[in-house]
Image (tube, rainbow, N blue to C red; front, side, top):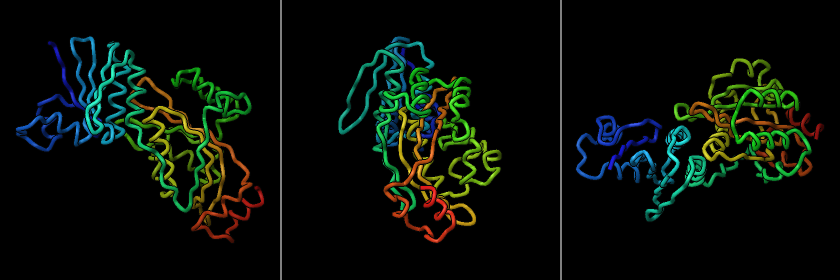
Length: 307
């Protein structure tokens, strides 16, 4: 049987089974055991096999998979002409599933590898997950319309997304970040000027190409970037209400906002994640529960008046 076997490392690099590159990634130059199986079960590798150009087999241990490896495999599947896929995954024992399209295989891999994602709420940040499916059922407001455009576009990004955002007056409050196997940390591709209320006035211009975690408030950057990575890896939208205390000279900026995160496919291995947001009132006084905030700061007094 004609069989091509490759592996993707946890870092998203492709190596041929048994090659020098594979043994280097394994960290053992002369393994006397099933090295491929060991790497899959213990090191977060994904085994990728093409059988007779008719079926692709993917072996993985979902709990150990890192985002670069997942994105590398998904990109390869979407570019393949093969129509039959077998996913073998380890969960106490080995399980096997057959899927009949690349899109279904990509979606199932996202589901299997999706962490039980709920970043620990730090004292300075509160997130209230909302049911994003409600946005597809309503035509009230620009966020609903953007969610519907994402669904009608099958999640494919093209220039019409920007045109639509301009038409719906969403562009100034939009952020676009890129996630790829080569750059698993979200990188800014666009920041609307409507975010200058919590960023320096020209940050949205010179931050393009920089990592999201490196924004001025690094705690907030590290916290919020987790959501972008989760949306990119699962391929599923996220809709939240967020209350955050963001460090912003000369004090602390407290904000409550509604956000919609959407994952968009591109012709490359990049996934673009768009953020669309708008301010919310704070009827439950959620901001009062945030710690590490100076209650006498001018920005908090301003927030309280606006709420």
